[in-house]
Figure 1 (cartoon, one colour):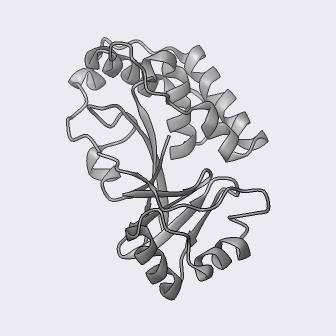
Figure 2 (cartoon, rainbow, N blue to C red):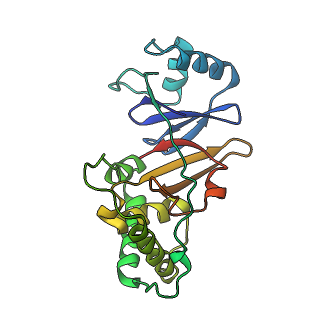
Length: 218
């Protein structure tokens, strides 16, 4: 369960630890045990003001600043990780790479991640609910397979954020029903990112991403 406490800050409970993500600062925070207990009680008492100790923690870490709206405990999101497997076309020899267009998507995404704040980049990839007919699962699988075959030809080191955002960018309108999910583990602390459709995880394996607790969905 994801708690959106500010437009740029979300929280989740991972392995009984309370973790905050501030995309404005591109930082994760592990909340100290005493304050975490207060926050968890606050999360259960919807539409109530934040305890002073919680506000102080947010201010001290510059998660909340002058001009920001009041923090809230009302916005809660649930992320379902789909269990269906992607189509076997992933392994099909008939899939033809598209080196140039994939390289362009990866390179432009790499540049944006270095030149712009993470919050701004994620806003570019935000998916609004679409009334249009969902993309056919096989068609989406075929396009993901093309990206996977083409990605090794771009000489930029792989990482989950770059590859997830690049795939989302390359899919374009075909990704309109998809979600970018950021997740965390607490012990040891690690963060991960993946793209999923309503039917399947597109940029990773189900077994891998279920090790992480979602903390943000875009």
